[in-house]
Image (cartoon, rainbow, N blue to C red):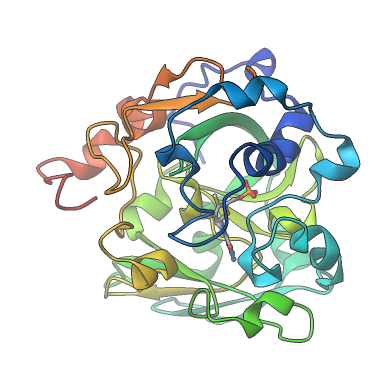
Length: 307
Ligand code: MTE
């Protein structure tokens, strides 16, 4: 598919690998937050403080212990302990609903038809930290083309694997399982929207959503659903996990927007990882810096209502 976006980010902008993998441990160590109150707690609601300077960076082993993947538990070392147990091969994705060719698509068959490329994208968490990630993957539009989208379809729903024997976290009703997400069809078809299979040129670590996850760079990170097993084309707006958990705080769209505060904190600025834990914050860009590419998708919409 032809590229309609300008990649203004360079390799030198990429968040250092250790920092990317390490961020939750740093955050967790800094604030000591739990999961109560929403996605990984309320660190960003807390004022930045002097304590940060006393933190020392963690080792690589520490690093891969910290990820947000609640199916494996919510305490900070759970993903490291348990995500390795996720069987990622063989893997198939059910594509159903309003498509010409519904069915179970084996991942290796999908990959044999896709061109894997690297995309260096900004990643902005709803908690107001950010980084730059070199994803490997392909455009979601190319996968949808494989299945053939029917003309009445308006939305795409996504579902994560739910394996009680491999995912200890799903014993707990932190969220309603399986984790689900959704996009409007035009968002899903946008050339920026990708299915990631790797980072830094390596296979996705399990805790980052192996073997296949969504990446939508102009939306908050929680839209990037991990370890996808089902994609459904529909004409109704699909339910999404965090919206079901707290509709007042997490909307369906969840576009990065400095003008719309989270009910518990401002989204006007963000802390860029890699610049020191409490390095000065930088202004958050509308649509996470992809305004030129995606603003037209929302023309005429009140983004305060459709947050
Ligand atoms: N997908 C599933 N299935 N389960 C999750 O708990 N967490 C989300 C998102 N996708 C999550 C998920 C959240 S809150 C974030 S911020 C990103 O994954 C984190 O992705 P990363 O750890 O690879 O940065």
